[in-house]
Image (cartoon, rainbow, N blue to C red; front, side, top):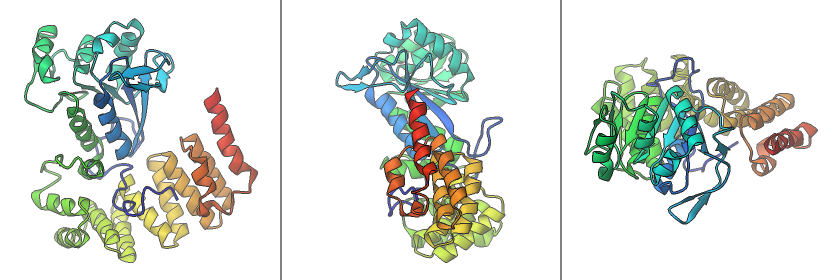
Length: 390
């Protein structure tokens, strides 16, 4: 299977959502969103690296970089980055991240600004960091909205865009389709807020914990009461006994709450009770929780206990919900272990088509031992390489 780290696997299944998920209209639940991060010469390193780390760690996002051309760009005078795409061939993003720095460089680029004006209004969310707000303003996205930027640029933002309500002393401003953040490190806060908005409290908090950005945590809300937050805190910070106790109390008070049941199941797995955890997770799924976070935990637990047929069914649901390359790869592993060689090869081919590229890991994975000698195994990765070459 595709593993993160043995100690983190069951808890840090950060590859998608919780039950309190907001989806773009027309998106299937858990669908992978494309995140385009704009680059240009003089871009601030943490402005793009911070949000990039958040989205890549949270999962449920395909993160790539876009610049005016394919030529490498220089950040901070010492980091050279080769963009994944130019504005001529970039996929249309669901999430657009516009970092700051020497943003005037990009503002003076006709091709770059034309692309920005085209894709930013169509994105599910257009996010800026630091002086990237000025680029969104030039694209017409800040008119009539509240926004912020680096503290040193607040007055300039007010004078440049008088129809924008500029806010100071905030880390980010969520104006719906547009999300602006203050300077540099504030981009991490804004990205975590967006993950929380799109994928739920638990995924966002787990992401922050994985990054050891422990100053960030979700606020209490209608979907996260103080009691529920304390239970979730215990789960996030790996206190399985306390998490199990608090979550058992929640489930006792509301036995049909699929969110509490799913969290309880993960706490039980973390405590070392796989049979109990699997049963609890299956109850959550039966009550309608088919979010990637729950399905990932259930499928992994089923696989680790030798229930390969059950893992295959769960990972198949996960592929249908999210369609990620790692999801299809795990389905291939479960099918191979279950003796379904043809189905395993089909799933592996699908995994590669969806972006799974670690041929070495697949070659060394004992779960796939039964299909490694099949010509389709080698062809799956060869076709991917041929596509990349084109």
